[in-house]
Length: 164
Image (cartoon, rainbow, N blue to C red; front, side, top):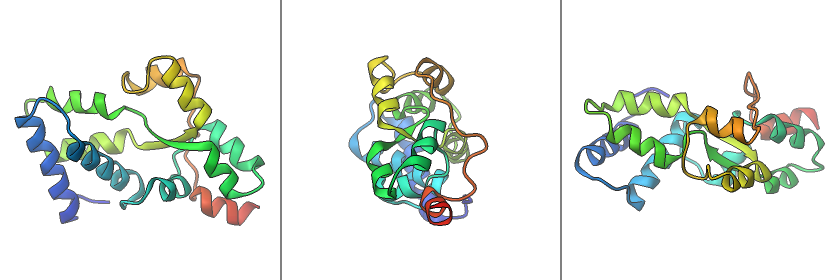
């Protein structure tokens, strides 16, 4: 996805202006950040359930569960979407940047793409106090979440069709 997409540019500009003029993050801003995260990760905005089927950025544990699941729907029930850097932390980064640009915002979401992890991994993040705080490396190390590197070559949905 490039910054040539005018819809993406408008959403990025909205985030930039809100960071300049507002202290707190409201629902409109949070949803816009989620939409940009979808574009940066998936090249489009989709529902959470579709994102689970499309996202190539997954944890090793989520991949292992994909391999052993009887159906793709069984796997989808056990995983969730997660922002490597929680949106609360991302908002702080944007607020602290006195020269915030839409390019910077875009690169941030590309650097920290949405990931798919097991719900049990997400529950552990929550239990450790990392639900909406912490840097990605710190959070994932504490919860022993290891991302699949490199990411999947195809979406989990396509992986399932090819390999099952």
